Length: 239
Image (cartoon, rainbow, N blue to C red; front, side, top):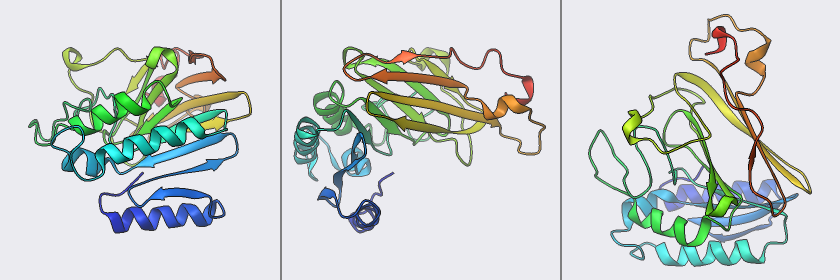
């Protein structure tokens, strides 16, 4: 969602500002805006992963967290979403923030990102959306049940999940299938649906490919609730 370079992040911020009528606040590397019942805050996670050698190292690691928390606290919208490229939790090949792997090596473990999210976002935002790993995943029960995390990186290609011994408990996980996350928000309810189909676009697909593999919903001031258990009953053509 947010680029690594300040110039790119600034361009994306300006594009969002134009889309939402200029109601975007913040700096080039982190900003927020209201969109109906949602408050959205986005951060340049590359700066946090590759620029923070300690929790409040440069650039803007501590500033970004304090700013995002203050924005979440003063928002009047019923639901709050944090957006960032790198995930907080992931069962993909890169792993969790604070333990990131690149080509099997811990080059940039992301401790600065992990610290920021654990201190300022988890338990304060309703939903954390990210990519980085090219598969679909959903985690609930974070921050006392208030926060859920979704990894949606399977729009154009897929990468495998990590071995079972390296995985966190998840509400849903799917590799080997292209897909996306659909987020819908109303005045009293926030919903996330994960859609997927076989990575071979030439494979036949029946109507169940247009039905979500996974759904979860959250009402204001309540914990997330899983609506569907996953893909167990879907047709083989969609797996």
